[in-house]
Amino acid sequence: MVEESFLHKGLRAKLVEHLATKGITENAVLNAISKIPRHLFFDSSFLHFAYKDIAFPISAGQTISQPFTVATQSQLIEVKKGDKVLEIGTGSGYQTAVLCEMGLYVYTIERQKVLYDKTKLFLSKLGYNRIKFYFGDGYKGIPESAPFDAILITAATEIIPKLLLLQLKIGGKMVIPLGTQKQIMTRIKRISEHDFETEKFGDCRFVPMLTGVNG
Ligand code: SAH
Image 1 (cartoon, helix red, strand yellow):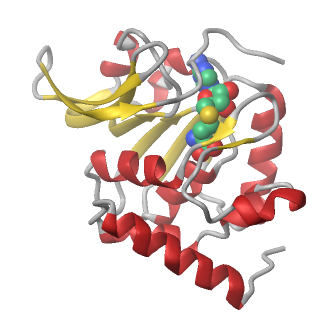
Image 2: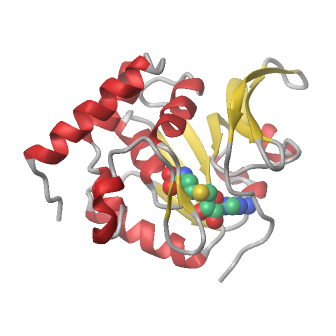
């Protein structure tokens, strides 16, 4: 299924260079982005947007995050090969694929049934067979598979989901866009059973994290 061309490879190399100049230094992240055919995550009529550093609408009123945002979140979780990561908001699956290419064990939750079905099938066709897909409300996490080395939230919340914090390992990190209209990229590290440390990393914009499921 993977249709590759020199053109796409060239455009990807340019995107990676652009991300590096914007401050992405983690090799595992840049390598992952240089490998993933992002154009296949778009409808054919929008192919020329695939390697621009912009967010773009996908089905069910959702968006595929901007490459810089995906790279930033993937870098901020500070993980190593073999770590276990929970992603909230599967969406197009692009961020999921990046985490998988980084050598992580990825668990991902989506609340919209159409996206869950479509992306699960699509990523398995691309050969990403190690990902565990869940249809459900990400606020609940996956208690039976916890604790996680990292939790990456790709939708905006006003408050920090407590249930998810408790699914982090001690030393584990959650990266979350916090806020309403505009968000601040926030990293929360679990430093002991009951203590957490918070750091902020600038403005960002995400679709809202909603409760319950759709479909
Ligand atoms: N990671 C995605 C970003 C998609 S946009 C990508 O790279 O394409 C955010 C996604 O979060 C949407 O698909 C939305 O349906 C989903 N979402 C919102 N609230 C959620 C929740 N409570 N649980 C799981 N997914 C949620």
